[in-house]
Length: 27
Image (cartoon, rainbow, N blue to C red):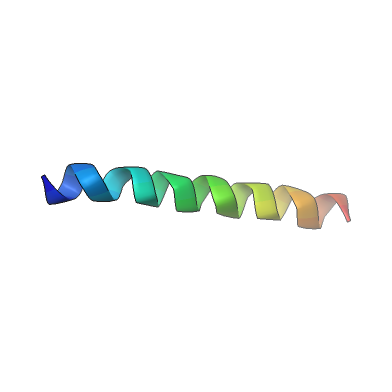
């Protein structure tokens, strides 16, 4: 149960980091 609830958070953080990298690359 803990793993299932923590997975979405990790995925969200990964997507956030990816979007931040894309923005920094564009600038």
